[in-house]
Amino acid sequence: MARVPAAVTKALGHLPRVPRALARRHAARRPGPTPELAARPHPWKRALGLITVVLLGAWLGLLVVGNVRVPVGPMNTTMTLRPSVAGGTKINISPLGALQLDSHIAPVRLDVNVDQLDPVRAQALVDHPERLSGLQDEVAQDVTHGTRDLAVRSCVAVVTGATALGLAVYRRPRRALAAGGLALTLLAASGGTAYATWNPESVLEPKFSGLLSSAPSLVGNARSIVTEFDVYQKELARLVTNVTKLYDATSTLPAYAPDPTTIRVLHVSDIHLNPASWKIIASLVEQYKVNVIVDSGDTMDHGTAAENGFLDPIEDLGAPYVWVRGNHDSQVTQRYLGKLKNVHVLDDGRARTVAGLRFAGIGDPQFTPDRTQIPGGDAANELAGARLATSLRDQRTAGTPVDVAIAHEPVAARQTDGEVPLALAGHIHHQEMELLPYGTRLRVEGSTGGSGLRAIEGKHPDPIQTSILYFDRDTRRLQAWDEIELGGLGLTTAEVRRHLVEENQPGGPDPDPDATSPSPTP
Image (cartoon, rainbow, N blue to C red):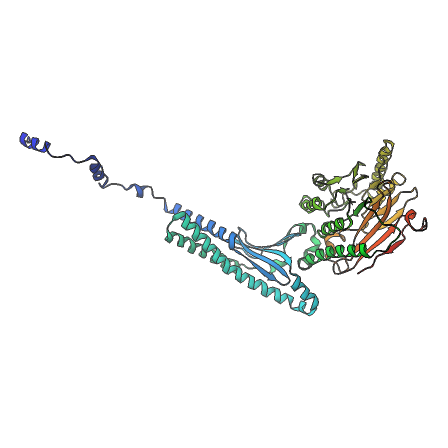
């Protein structure tokens, strides 16, 4: 190897050195693997991320703006598209539950919420019955128009949602537009799949949930429920309010005028899952200044846990609620009611003082909806009534006599004769008042639910019946009672009749305990 002359080496030593920063920059420019390219994600991961952004953005768009309010016949509805695995159509009918139709197979589901009945369009049908013949075509046109509007709005919603989320995630307009375009493509593909698999016969085989699942007999009349139930409950509530006002204003009964200290008890029974009953009861509580509500059972139809939500309005009726179990109420029902505020559940002869009156009651020993149990008939109820009578005697011996005994079956209530001034019962779905041989007065209430949801199915539904019982606060004895009866669905009749206990009738005792003075009937 040739040796470098000393003079050359000395000359190079006097040259300025290259700065370290410049050297590092020069080294960074050397050929080699680029760090950015090395950290770049796999194409499949990028595609999965894009699809996630598209689906989430489309869902958010549908959730925020992807619904339309559409009048369908006399009803106001809200239509919405929702992501779904199985597709289909879900029709929510508050407060009865929902119907599910296997109308199509696609990753989107059509939700239809029946919000309310439009009073103007409903009244137009009442005033012009000839329009009913064309109602089917009108409903079909409304649904078609609503579906078209929903499709347009859904396209805008998914494109806007996916594009906005893509811009927020990627911060690149091109990627955001790609997300919006992919969302529109997916929606169009879903719509095409739904159209190709559309099954119009699915309406003949709906699946019911909520309260509707407990009433299979209503399957054939679901359309009637939707179109008539809202009017049904609102009209009855209005009738109750107006008739009671009319009664208070025009009653000329001189025999008994309850003073402010009178204890007013509202006796209801056999509601059988009719949601309209709560509106009527709340109206009566307000109009009559009711102090306590007594329910003699059969509030439910099947006693299942799915029905428990039906009981929640009891907390807001405005008065304490005393309840005994009927043969359609299960132990599940009883435990649920026991947890509600303002509710007093009586069973096994237990006594409770509520609103100045002492009540004792026993639940029905039979649960007839459960066919695995063999009903015991009248013998079982006679035994239950005997247990209640024993409890009444024990209470009187202890110096805490009971004012009112409650049982569901009249057979059980009759066993308390001579042990209590008044016994209340239900079960038979019509009103009776009977003076038993040993002095106990038995009051049997009708169906406050008009025999339940079946009332809107028959041609002549049972009337809705309930009573207001007036008690003297000092003696805690029954002074008078008002029988209230409302016509069933389609019958705009209402009647309030005043009945007096014998000793409170003008001119002394009257041998007829059921002497009545009917009020005007609208």
